[in-house]
Amino acid sequence: MLNLIRSDWIHYADNPEYLEPSADMKRSLEETAQKALELRILIQKVRDYAQLQMLLLLNKRSISGDASNSPFSDRQLETLSHMYFFAEHTAENLIITRGSKGDTPRRSAWIAAAEIYEKATSKTAYYSMNSQQEIDGPFTRYLMAFCRFCFPANHDDVESVEAFCKWMKRVRQSGGHPSLQVLGLDIPQT
Image (cartoon, rainbow, N blue to C red):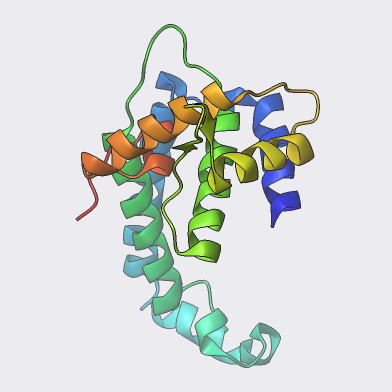
């Protein structure tokens, strides 16, 4: 799992345009939603033509003998409906910010690491203080080890962990989800 997070971080660090919300991203999502809806309507319209039904019947064996594999099946129409919904919903809720955006790939990786920690320990991912009032605790040590493994070139410090924990707590208290907010989708979870 950590190797998957590491490869995702490297991919997005090399391609921030896939991660940082932009007007181009929003336009692409809107266009995808529109095309999915248009294709669904067109397939719905033509799938009942007798000529198409005859061709599908004659070629049934070439389609693995399973009618649900047909490009005109209910399953395909449902897939296009889902594609329309998700692309449209994402475009509507995308928050495009200007100026400094921070280290979104690293924050996304930290969120994934925090979720792994919470599932494995059944504890909230948050720092604690030791007797000298320094940032410490199991989650801090875990996240620092995670950083040494996944991002050996980066030099993260415990103050970064503190800031991350406070940010994640604020997002959760406001009803949002950290993974959505860091990607520009500030959608309250119900």
